[in-house]
Length: 168
Image 1 (tube, rainbow, N blue to C red):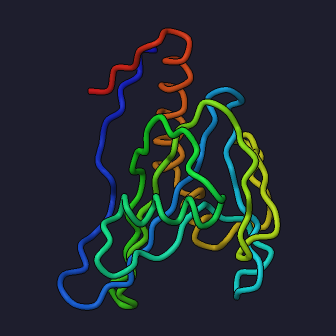
Image 2: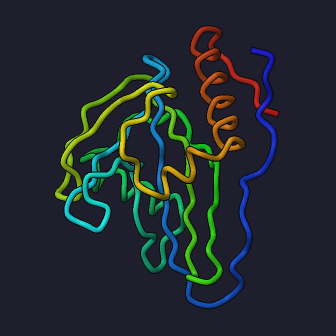
């Protein structure tokens, strides 16, 4: 193992006022070392690949919103070992915040897609499907975030061999 997970979720506060908050998860299977992407359908980002996620509704916290979005978009709640925050993107001018997590699962699963998506793909870290949703592209083009994802996935893949994980 030998790696430690350090650092904080990056982002700037938006202050008070109306904030459009969203949340999403990049699912990672320790069994196959592949990530889940959903193919969007019917909106302005039609036919782009994205994470599972969506808007935080009034009165919801981030984890409740993420749990709801997972069920809405893949049809059920998979056995998630852990959800780890990797990014908080904010846009002060537009009053927008997007919180991204890595959701660790042991095995891949077949999502029961809703009407927002027309397909899914489990892919390796070096073979993202194309074209990516612009925000997903921005996230996955950030070297610091890629390093976080790699550290997380390495730790959890190693822990499946040893049965333990040590996050300082």
